[in-house]
Amino acid sequence: MDDKSPHLHYVFIHVVHTQDNKTNKLIDKISCTEFWKGKNSYKQLQDKFYSYMTSSGFDLDRCRMRENKYIPIKELKTITNHEVQEYELKSLNLKKNLKQI
Image (cartoon, rainbow, N blue to C red; front, side, top):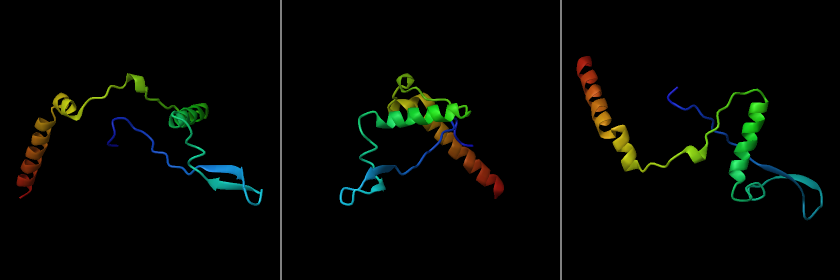
């Protein structure tokens, strides 16, 4: 696994149970606008998913957005010493390729 923090990507199509305006029959239709209502609709979805999964016995850890701090890319590269690491990786690959010749 290449992630330090394993996570899940969840893809779904929201189906709304509603009544057809023309025929008055009950129908199922795909609808984003009826599902994504309000500023916190995505957060509410994540909260409900987390509650459902943990109540079903899965041990999940939920990220707390308030604890996260945005770091600009330039600062992140400085913190992680990005350029030096990139140079060392290139150097290692060159040495590895030379040994194979």
